[in-house]
Length: 407
Ligand code: NIG
Ligand code: FE
Image (cartoon, rainbow, N blue to C red; front, side, top):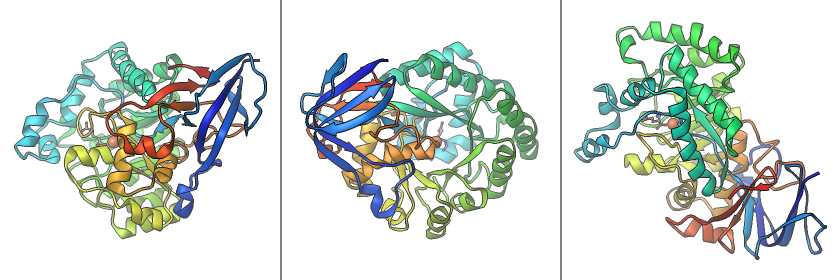
Protein backbone atom coordinates (compact mmCIF):
# COMPACT_ATOMS: atom_id res chain seq x y z
CA UNK A 1 0.00 0.00 0.00
CA UNK A 2 1.29 3.49 -0.89
CA UNK A 3 0.94 5.91 2.01
CA UNK A 4 1.54 9.65 1.86
CA UNK A 5 1.16 11.90 4.89
CA UNK A 6 0.72 15.63 4.37
CA UNK A 7 1.57 17.11 7.74
CA UNK A 8 2.28 20.48 9.35
CA UNK A 9 -0.70 22.04 7.54
CA UNK A 10 -1.24 25.56 8.93
CA UNK A 11 -4.85 25.71 7.77
CA UNK A 12 -6.95 23.10 6.00
CA UNK A 13 -9.99 24.59 4.23
CA UNK A 14 -12.61 22.38 2.60
CA UNK A 15 -16.33 22.14 1.93
CA UNK A 16 -17.86 18.88 3.09
CA UNK A 17 -20.21 16.27 1.68
CA UNK A 18 -21.04 14.38 -1.49
CA UNK A 19 -23.37 16.86 -3.16
CA UNK A 20 -23.53 20.51 -4.18
CA UNK A 21 -23.95 23.13 -1.44
CA UNK A 22 -26.51 25.91 -1.94
CA UNK A 23 -27.92 28.97 -0.19
CA UNK A 24 -26.32 29.66 3.20
CA UNK A 25 -24.44 26.37 2.91
CA UNK A 26 -22.51 27.52 -0.18
CA UNK A 27 -20.05 29.27 2.15
CA UNK A 28 -19.94 26.73 4.96
CA UNK A 29 -16.33 25.66 4.69
CA UNK A 30 -14.61 23.61 7.39
CA UNK A 31 -11.35 25.10 8.70
CA UNK A 32 -8.86 22.97 10.63
CA UNK A 33 -5.70 24.46 12.14
CA UNK A 34 -2.48 22.45 12.49
CA UNK A 35 -3.87 19.57 10.53
CA UNK A 36 -2.65 16.49 8.65
CA UNK A 37 -4.11 14.39 5.83
CA UNK A 38 -3.31 10.72 5.27
CA UNK A 39 -3.53 9.36 1.72
CA UNK A 40 -3.49 5.63 0.96
CA UNK A 41 -3.53 4.18 -2.54
CA UNK A 42 -4.66 7.46 -4.03
CA UNK A 43 -7.52 8.03 -1.59
CA UNK A 44 -7.86 10.17 1.54
CA UNK A 45 -8.25 7.79 4.48
CA UNK A 46 -7.90 10.09 7.50
CA UNK A 47 -7.84 13.80 8.36
CA UNK A 48 -6.93 15.10 11.78
CA UNK A 49 -5.15 17.54 14.06
CA UNK A 50 -2.43 16.94 16.63
CA UNK A 51 -0.21 13.88 16.47
CA UNK A 52 -0.06 12.49 12.92
CA UNK A 53 0.16 8.79 12.02
CA UNK A 54 3.37 7.27 10.58
CA UNK A 55 3.82 7.01 6.81
CA UNK A 56 6.68 6.04 4.47
CA UNK A 57 6.36 9.28 2.54
CA UNK A 58 5.79 12.63 4.25
CA UNK A 59 5.07 15.99 2.64
CA UNK A 60 5.68 18.92 4.99
CA UNK A 61 3.16 21.70 4.26
CA UNK A 62 5.27 24.22 6.21
CA UNK A 63 2.22 25.72 7.94
CA UNK A 64 0.61 26.72 4.61
CA UNK A 65 -2.99 26.56 3.44
CA UNK A 66 -4.26 23.25 2.00
CA UNK A 67 -7.50 22.88 -0.01
CA UNK A 68 -9.03 20.27 -2.32
CA UNK A 69 -7.60 20.25 -5.86
CA UNK A 70 -9.47 22.75 -8.03
CA UNK A 71 -12.07 21.46 -10.48
CA UNK A 72 -12.57 23.36 -13.76
CA UNK A 73 -16.10 22.31 -14.75
CA UNK A 74 -16.32 24.12 -18.09
CA UNK A 75 -13.65 24.31 -20.79
CA UNK A 76 -13.43 24.09 -24.57
CA UNK A 77 -9.99 22.51 -24.21
CA UNK A 78 -9.61 20.92 -27.65
CA UNK A 79 -9.22 23.29 -30.59
CA UNK A 80 -7.00 24.12 -33.53
CA UNK A 81 -5.45 27.59 -33.92
CA UNK A 82 -6.09 30.73 -31.92
CA UNK A 83 -8.12 33.88 -32.69
CA UNK A 84 -5.89 36.81 -31.80
CA UNK A 85 -7.04 38.48 -35.04
CA UNK A 86 -10.44 39.07 -33.37
CA UNK A 87 -8.93 41.34 -30.73
CA UNK A 88 -8.64 44.23 -33.20
CA UNK A 89 -12.22 43.66 -34.40
CA UNK A 90 -13.42 43.72 -30.79
CA UNK A 91 -11.57 46.95 -30.15
CA UNK A 92 -13.34 48.45 -33.15
CA UNK A 93 -16.69 47.54 -31.67
CA UNK A 94 -17.56 44.43 -33.71
CA UNK A 95 -19.62 42.17 -31.42
CA UNK A 96 -19.10 38.47 -30.68
CA UNK A 97 -22.30 37.45 -32.51
CA UNK A 98 -21.45 39.71 -35.49
CA UNK A 99 -18.08 38.01 -35.87
CA UNK A 100 -19.81 34.61 -35.74
CA UNK A 101 -22.52 35.63 -38.23
CA UNK A 102 -19.78 36.72 -40.68
CA UNK A 103 -18.26 33.20 -40.62
CA UNK A 104 -15.55 34.02 -38.05
CA UNK A 105 -15.56 33.23 -34.34
CA UNK A 106 -16.42 29.61 -33.57
CA UNK A 107 -16.59 28.87 -37.32
CA UNK A 108 -12.98 29.94 -37.87
CA UNK A 109 -11.87 27.64 -35.03
CA UNK A 110 -13.92 24.88 -36.70
CA UNK A 111 -11.85 25.27 -39.88
CA UNK A 112 -8.59 25.06 -37.90
CA UNK A 113 -9.81 22.09 -35.85
CA UNK A 114 -10.96 20.14 -38.91
CA UNK A 115 -7.47 20.60 -40.37
CA UNK A 116 -5.72 19.14 -37.27
CA UNK A 117 -4.97 15.50 -36.50
CA UNK A 118 -5.97 13.85 -33.21
CA UNK A 119 -2.34 13.93 -32.17
CA UNK A 120 -1.95 17.63 -32.93
CA UNK A 121 -5.12 18.44 -30.98
CA UNK A 122 -3.99 16.33 -28.02
CA UNK A 123 -0.48 17.82 -27.98
CA UNK A 124 -1.80 21.36 -27.94
CA UNK A 125 -4.29 20.59 -25.17
CA UNK A 126 -1.63 18.74 -23.17
CA UNK A 127 0.37 21.97 -22.85
CA UNK A 128 -2.76 23.70 -21.53
CA UNK A 129 -3.35 20.88 -19.03
CA UNK A 130 0.26 21.13 -17.82
CA UNK A 131 -0.32 24.82 -17.09
CA UNK A 132 -3.65 24.11 -15.37
CA UNK A 133 -2.03 21.51 -13.12
CA UNK A 134 0.62 24.03 -12.07
CA UNK A 135 -2.25 26.39 -11.20
CA UNK A 136 -3.76 23.79 -8.87
CA UNK A 137 -6.42 22.29 -11.14
CA UNK A 138 -6.74 18.51 -10.79
CA UNK A 139 -9.95 17.74 -12.76
CA UNK A 140 -11.16 19.36 -15.98
CA UNK A 141 -14.35 19.12 -18.02
CA UNK A 142 -13.64 19.36 -21.77
CA UNK A 143 -16.09 19.84 -24.64
CA UNK A 144 -16.10 18.99 -28.30
CA UNK A 145 -17.88 21.49 -30.55
CA UNK A 146 -15.23 22.71 -32.97
CA UNK A 147 -15.75 19.83 -35.39
CA UNK A 148 -19.44 20.14 -36.24
CA UNK A 149 -19.18 17.02 -38.39
CA UNK A 150 -19.17 13.38 -37.37
CA UNK A 151 -15.49 12.74 -37.96
CA UNK A 152 -14.05 15.84 -36.28
CA UNK A 153 -16.39 15.72 -33.26
CA UNK A 154 -15.27 12.12 -32.66
CA UNK A 155 -11.63 13.15 -33.16
CA UNK A 156 -11.93 15.87 -30.51
CA UNK A 157 -13.55 13.46 -28.06
CA UNK A 158 -10.91 10.81 -28.75
CA UNK A 159 -8.23 13.42 -27.98
CA UNK A 160 -9.98 14.04 -24.64
CA UNK A 161 -10.05 10.32 -23.88
CA UNK A 162 -6.38 9.96 -24.76
CA UNK A 163 -5.42 12.87 -22.46
CA UNK A 164 -7.56 11.49 -19.64
CA UNK A 165 -5.48 8.32 -19.83
CA UNK A 166 -2.08 10.00 -20.26
CA UNK A 167 -2.21 13.14 -18.13
CA UNK A 168 -2.36 13.37 -14.32
CA UNK A 169 -5.45 15.61 -14.63
CA UNK A 170 -8.73 13.67 -14.85
CA UNK A 171 -11.00 14.74 -17.71
CA UNK A 172 -14.79 14.64 -18.06
CA UNK A 173 -15.98 14.73 -21.67
CA UNK A 174 -18.96 16.68 -23.00
CA UNK A 175 -20.39 16.41 -26.50
CA UNK A 176 -21.13 19.91 -27.84
CA UNK A 177 -21.96 19.23 -31.48
CA UNK A 178 -24.63 21.92 -31.07
CA UNK A 179 -22.07 24.69 -30.65
CA UNK A 180 -22.92 26.39 -33.96
CA UNK A 181 -24.53 25.50 -37.29
CA UNK A 182 -21.62 24.64 -39.63
CA UNK A 183 -21.20 26.56 -42.87
CA UNK A 184 -22.22 23.61 -45.07
CA UNK A 185 -25.61 23.47 -43.27
CA UNK A 186 -26.14 27.25 -43.27
CA UNK A 187 -29.34 26.86 -45.30
CA UNK A 188 -30.42 23.60 -43.69
CA UNK A 189 -30.47 23.95 -39.89
CA UNK A 190 -33.02 21.18 -39.67
CA UNK A 191 -30.64 18.87 -41.56
CA UNK A 192 -27.84 19.63 -39.07
CA UNK A 193 -30.06 19.01 -36.05
CA UNK A 194 -31.15 15.69 -37.57
CA UNK A 195 -27.50 14.77 -38.22
CA UNK A 196 -26.67 15.47 -34.57
CA UNK A 197 -29.65 13.56 -33.16
CA UNK A 198 -29.71 10.61 -35.55
CA UNK A 199 -26.03 10.02 -36.34
CA UNK A 200 -23.49 11.89 -34.26
CA UNK A 201 -24.99 11.35 -30.76
CA UNK A 202 -25.43 7.59 -31.33
CA UNK A 203 -21.83 7.34 -32.63
CA UNK A 204 -20.45 9.24 -29.61
CA UNK A 205 -22.31 6.95 -27.24
CA UNK A 206 -21.33 3.78 -29.14
CA UNK A 207 -17.66 4.63 -28.55
CA UNK A 208 -18.39 5.76 -24.96
CA UNK A 209 -16.70 9.09 -25.71
CA UNK A 210 -18.82 11.47 -23.58
CA UNK A 211 -20.86 11.65 -20.38
CA UNK A 212 -22.63 14.94 -21.05
CA UNK A 213 -24.43 16.67 -23.92
CA UNK A 214 -24.32 20.47 -24.12
CA UNK A 215 -25.93 23.03 -26.49
CA UNK A 216 -25.25 26.72 -27.18
CA UNK A 217 -28.76 28.14 -26.73
CA UNK A 218 -28.35 31.65 -28.14
CA UNK A 219 -29.67 34.13 -30.69
CA UNK A 220 -28.48 33.04 -34.14
CA UNK A 221 -27.20 29.71 -32.81
CA UNK A 222 -29.80 27.25 -31.37
CA UNK A 223 -33.25 28.29 -30.14
CA UNK A 224 -34.66 26.97 -26.87
CA UNK A 225 -36.89 24.53 -28.77
CA UNK A 226 -34.00 23.25 -30.91
CA UNK A 227 -31.83 22.98 -27.80
CA UNK A 228 -34.50 20.93 -26.07
CA UNK A 229 -34.73 18.49 -29.00
CA UNK A 230 -30.96 17.96 -29.06
CA UNK A 231 -30.70 17.51 -25.28
CA UNK A 232 -33.63 15.06 -25.30
CA UNK A 233 -31.91 13.05 -28.05
CA UNK A 234 -28.74 12.98 -25.94
CA UNK A 235 -30.71 11.89 -22.87
CA UNK A 236 -32.32 9.06 -24.82
CA UNK A 237 -28.80 7.74 -25.37
CA UNK A 238 -27.71 8.28 -21.75
CA UNK A 239 -25.94 11.66 -22.05
CA UNK A 240 -26.59 14.04 -19.13
CA UNK A 241 -27.80 17.51 -20.26
CA UNK A 242 -25.88 20.77 -19.81
CA UNK A 243 -26.85 24.12 -21.38
CA UNK A 244 -24.93 27.24 -22.46
CA UNK A 245 -27.75 29.57 -21.42
CA UNK A 246 -28.34 33.34 -21.27
CA UNK A 247 -24.77 34.23 -22.27
CA UNK A 248 -25.74 37.12 -24.53
CA UNK A 249 -29.53 37.04 -24.94
CA UNK A 250 -32.03 35.44 -22.52
CA UNK A 251 -33.92 33.28 -25.05
CA UNK A 252 -35.10 30.63 -22.57
CA UNK A 253 -32.00 28.53 -21.96
CA UNK A 254 -32.11 28.73 -18.18
CA UNK A 255 -35.83 27.89 -18.20
CA UNK A 256 -35.04 24.73 -20.12
CA UNK A 257 -32.99 23.35 -17.20
CA UNK A 258 -36.12 22.20 -15.40
CA UNK A 259 -37.75 20.76 -18.52
CA UNK A 260 -34.77 18.55 -19.41
CA UNK A 261 -33.32 18.01 -15.90
CA UNK A 262 -29.98 19.67 -16.69
CA UNK A 263 -27.13 18.91 -14.28
CA UNK A 264 -25.71 22.39 -14.94
CA UNK A 265 -26.41 25.60 -16.82
CA UNK A 266 -23.47 27.66 -18.03
CA UNK A 267 -22.76 31.42 -18.29
CA UNK A 268 -26.17 32.81 -17.16
CA UNK A 269 -24.87 36.36 -17.59
CA UNK A 270 -28.35 37.73 -18.33
CA UNK A 271 -30.34 35.04 -16.49
CA UNK A 272 -33.88 36.29 -15.67
CA UNK A 273 -35.59 35.61 -12.31
CA UNK A 274 -37.73 32.85 -13.92
CA UNK A 275 -34.55 31.07 -14.99
CA UNK A 276 -33.17 31.24 -11.46
CA UNK A 277 -36.45 29.78 -10.19
CA UNK A 278 -36.30 26.93 -12.71
CA UNK A 279 -32.73 26.06 -11.73
CA UNK A 280 -33.59 26.15 -8.03
CA UNK A 281 -36.49 23.73 -8.58
CA UNK A 282 -34.43 21.43 -10.81
CA UNK A 283 -31.38 21.41 -8.48
CA UNK A 284 -29.27 22.53 -11.45
CA UNK A 285 -25.76 23.82 -10.70
CA UNK A 286 -25.25 27.36 -12.06
CA UNK A 287 -21.81 27.21 -13.63
CA UNK A 288 -20.78 30.86 -13.90
CA UNK A 289 -17.82 32.02 -15.96
CA UNK A 290 -16.69 35.47 -14.85
CA UNK A 291 -13.49 35.55 -16.95
CA UNK A 292 -15.74 35.39 -20.04
CA UNK A 293 -17.79 38.39 -18.85
CA UNK A 294 -14.50 40.15 -18.21
CA UNK A 295 -13.15 39.31 -21.67
CA UNK A 296 -16.38 40.09 -23.53
CA UNK A 297 -16.77 43.33 -21.59
CA UNK A 298 -20.30 42.31 -20.64
CA UNK A 299 -22.15 42.41 -17.34
CA UNK A 300 -21.70 39.72 -14.67
CA UNK A 301 -24.13 36.90 -13.82
CA UNK A 302 -26.51 37.65 -10.89
CA UNK A 303 -24.76 35.22 -8.59
CA UNK A 304 -25.99 36.75 -5.30
CA UNK A 305 -29.60 36.32 -6.52
CA UNK A 306 -28.83 32.69 -7.39
CA UNK A 307 -27.34 31.95 -3.98
CA UNK A 308 -30.28 33.69 -2.28
CA UNK A 309 -32.69 31.53 -4.30
CA UNK A 310 -30.91 28.31 -3.28
CA UNK A 311 -29.16 27.58 -6.59
CA UNK A 312 -25.74 25.94 -6.05
CA UNK A 313 -23.07 28.00 -7.84
CA UNK A 314 -19.89 26.68 -9.46
CA UNK A 315 -17.21 28.84 -11.08
CA UNK A 316 -15.20 27.72 -14.10
CA UNK A 317 -12.78 29.15 -16.67
CA UNK A 318 -14.63 28.57 -20.00
CA UNK A 319 -11.14 28.35 -21.54
CA UNK A 320 -11.59 28.70 -25.34
CA UNK A 321 -9.93 30.64 -28.18
CA UNK A 322 -12.75 33.16 -28.60
CA UNK A 323 -14.59 34.43 -25.55
CA UNK A 324 -12.04 33.43 -22.88
CA UNK A 325 -8.44 32.76 -23.90
CA UNK A 326 -7.47 32.21 -20.23
CA UNK A 327 -7.28 28.92 -18.36
CA UNK A 328 -6.44 30.52 -15.01
CA UNK A 329 -8.95 29.35 -12.40
CA UNK A 330 -7.20 31.43 -9.72
CA UNK A 331 -8.10 34.57 -11.70
CA UNK A 332 -11.68 33.26 -11.83
CA UNK A 333 -11.60 33.01 -8.01
CA UNK A 334 -10.47 36.65 -7.77
CA UNK A 335 -13.30 37.70 -10.09
CA UNK A 336 -15.80 35.63 -8.08
CA UNK A 337 -15.10 37.87 -5.09
CA UNK A 338 -14.65 41.17 -6.89
CA UNK A 339 -17.41 40.94 -9.50
CA UNK A 340 -19.96 38.48 -8.08
CA UNK A 341 -19.43 39.68 -4.47
CA UNK A 342 -18.96 36.10 -3.30
CA UNK A 343 -17.07 35.43 -0.08
CA UNK A 344 -13.78 33.48 -0.32
CA UNK A 345 -15.59 30.54 1.34
CA UNK A 346 -18.37 30.60 -1.28
CA UNK A 347 -15.72 30.80 -4.00
CA UNK A 348 -13.82 27.80 -2.62
CA UNK A 349 -16.98 25.67 -2.67
CA UNK A 350 -17.68 26.94 -6.21
CA UNK A 351 -14.34 25.71 -7.60
CA UNK A 352 -14.25 22.43 -5.67
CA UNK A 353 -17.37 20.60 -4.44
CA UNK A 354 -19.97 22.45 -6.55
CA UNK A 355 -17.78 22.21 -9.63
CA UNK A 356 -17.46 18.48 -8.96
CA UNK A 357 -21.27 18.27 -8.71
CA UNK A 358 -21.60 20.06 -12.08
CA UNK A 359 -19.72 17.12 -13.64
CA UNK A 360 -21.40 14.42 -11.55
CA UNK A 361 -18.35 13.66 -9.42
CA UNK A 362 -19.22 15.14 -6.01
CA UNK A 363 -19.09 11.66 -4.48
CA UNK A 364 -15.43 11.23 -5.55
CA UNK A 365 -13.73 14.66 -5.53
CA UNK A 366 -14.22 18.26 -4.40
CA UNK A 367 -13.48 17.99 -0.67
CA UNK A 368 -10.76 16.79 1.70
CA UNK A 369 -12.53 14.00 3.54
CA UNK A 370 -11.95 10.28 4.07
CA UNK A 371 -13.32 8.39 1.06
CA UNK A 372 -12.52 11.11 -1.47
CA UNK A 373 -9.73 10.92 -4.05
CA UNK A 374 -6.49 12.42 -2.70
CA UNK A 375 -6.39 15.54 -4.91
CA UNK A 376 -5.03 18.52 -2.95
CA UNK A 377 -3.25 21.84 -3.31
CA UNK A 378 -0.63 23.14 -0.86
CA UNK A 379 -0.78 26.89 -1.43
CA UNK A 380 1.96 29.49 -1.11
CA UNK A 381 -0.52 31.25 1.13
CA UNK A 382 -1.34 31.36 4.84
CA UNK A 383 -5.13 31.40 4.41
CA UNK A 384 -8.02 31.43 1.93
CA UNK A 385 -8.50 35.21 1.97
CA UNK A 386 -4.93 35.59 0.73
CA UNK A 387 -5.60 33.35 -2.32
CA UNK A 388 -8.69 35.36 -3.30
CA UNK A 389 -7.04 38.72 -2.65
CA UNK A 390 -3.69 38.36 -4.43
CA UNK A 391 -4.11 38.97 -8.16
CA UNK A 392 -2.09 37.73 -11.10
CA UNK A 393 0.43 35.42 -9.41
CA UNK A 394 0.27 31.64 -9.32
CA UNK A 395 -0.08 30.80 -5.61
CA UNK A 396 -0.43 27.02 -6.02
CA UNK A 397 2.80 25.80 -4.46
CA UNK A 398 2.55 22.02 -4.63
CA UNK A 399 -0.14 19.81 -6.12
CA UNK A 400 -1.05 16.26 -5.06
CA UNK A 401 -3.04 14.10 -7.49
CA UNK A 402 -4.33 10.67 -6.44
CA UNK A 403 -1.94 10.67 -3.48
CA UNK A 404 1.18 11.58 -5.50
CA UNK A 405 2.96 14.91 -5.65
CA UNK A 406 2.77 15.99 -9.30
CA UNK A 407 3.88 19.65 -9.00
O1 NIG B 1 -18.66 29.36 -23.81
N1 NIG B 1 -20.57 30.35 -26.01
C1 NIG B 1 -20.18 29.44 -26.68
N2 NIG B 1 -19.01 28.86 -26.59
C2 NIG B 1 -17.87 29.44 -25.99
C3 NIG B 1 -17.16 30.32 -26.93
C4 NIG B 1 -16.52 29.56 -27.98
C5 NIG B 1 -15.74 30.38 -28.97
O2 NIG B 1 -15.93 31.58 -29.11
O3 NIG B 1 -14.90 29.74 -29.62
C6 NIG B 1 -18.27 30.09 -24.69
O4 NIG B 1 -18.16 31.32 -24.51
FE1 FE C 1 -18.43 27.65 -22.99
